[in-house]
Image 1 (cartoon, rainbow, N blue to C red):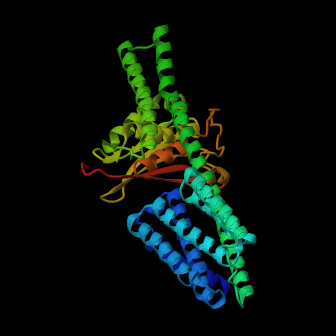
Image 2 (image 1 turned 120 degrees about the vertical axis):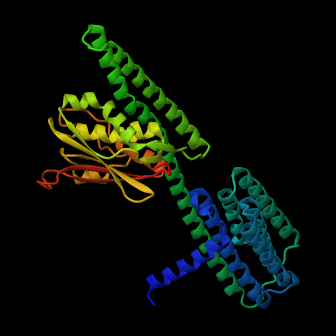
Image 3 (image 1 turned 180 degrees about the vertical axis):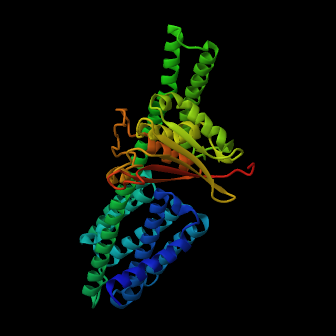
Length: 440
């Protein structure tokens, strides 16, 4: 069996035991999963160390303490294991496991006169593990405990209370202990690097989340604000043929801006309290018609025709403001931006099953090069491009769209080719798959 197969077998065995040890759903949160892995790995390594000493200690070290001491520590470690297995309390399990490990290390140092040797370096690992499994307060507590035990051990050594009971074979015992110490130190280093990686990802998610809220505000109020400004200018100059309709348009777009602001507040609240975005049955056709009406001025300016391929009475589960502005509004805005003057945009609704429906917004514009397609939904990548009529973009829209689609339980797909890649099928198709409502 080669090393790859061996590593795969060991990993499967580890994951089998870990999944039995961890509670269902506990692995879904990265920080929680990290602590459970560290707790489980620390338990496994401590068992190897304690079992080795329980087997070899009575053979090479004299004294009754060596006979029953490791067994007590093993029982404490298993109590920690079973406590988490059935109580799911990381703090309690970590305290029991650290108590078992501290007792074992102190006992080991006591019977081999270890307070004068490097063996008590094991103590230095305990506050680090305590901090990683619990918090700074408990790390400080264990640091105080460790320092107190080491000082007491050195004082006891000075008084002659500590014994050196090692007999024949002590070299083997000490070498094994040092090798196991290196294993523990290496494993702990791995977990420290893993914790740093998880913290970096968590920080990135927080930055992206706050950026998304700001981007929604900046990006999505620009269209209704532009409509209000243009309509107001026409009214002021007396060029609008229907003043009443113009007033209604301004009022409607002011309401849209208010809804976007409310959505931002709600998103922040939902994220802070880990609450799912509330969804409701919505008429998909009505939503799409509102989106087309919202962008009618831009469509008219570029003389773009919209071909609608959908019937009425298709209901989906969603959030109205998200669907209009952050999802379909962003996609139609991009389709207009990258379409040529006098072009065409297709909007189609395709039921996929009794439970899902697909909305396709297809343009026949300039398409996206491969580099842009690869980074399309990365909120930290720069995908800003200029439109066919010189429109300036922000690059914010599609990451926002993807995030909002996933928040309401859907998914997004993209197909895009430039004219250089395909002379016949160039352009972009953006596909949104949504959950159908039972009202449908």
